[in-house]
Length: 221
Image 1 (spheres, one colour):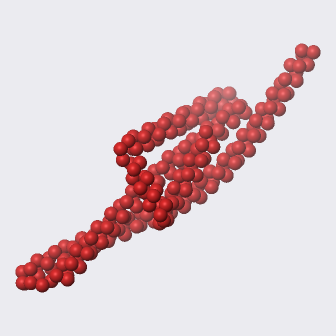
Image 2 (tube, rainbow, N blue to C red):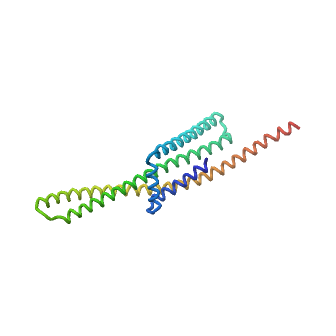
Image 3 (cartoon, rainbow, N blue to C red):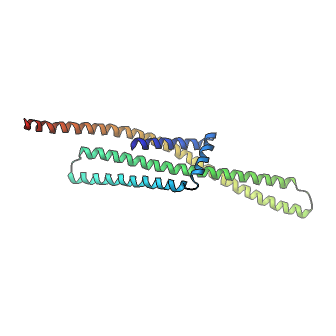
């Protein structure tokens, strides 16, 4: 379970890095995400996300149950400590995986919005040039063309401001992706530490079992 979650997180981070940098692979990923968001894709994604949330809630419930049992006993059971560490790691990885999924969805949305805004701006600029090049005719036609040019310029300014805003959002998304990369490194270090703690606790359990089995062996003799 933990190895599977780790593999999914690594794949998600690679997907985020692909979306951040312009390349032919980025276009392929965007097209794939577009297809996923059509038809039955959203239903499948929601189903998987709901399943992960249920498993996450189950892990949290198990941690609360172990914590309450430890408080009632007053002494930390080594087995409960191992289970607590495992549930905590699984819950952390699942939460991080859901957050990365949200980041991928938002990055894809912003990239598509920026692409549409740029195409609209280019079309408006071409139309503006065509109007300016065709300024021939009567005074009324020139006046009408001038009004249309003014409207187009206003639209271009508006689209430019929207494009700048989307670019800022994309930069913020890149900064969040970098923060996620650093956070994932922290999760990996925490994962190694928890594995070491898990091994130590198992060694303690084996020593306890051996110490308990020795008196029983003596009593049998």
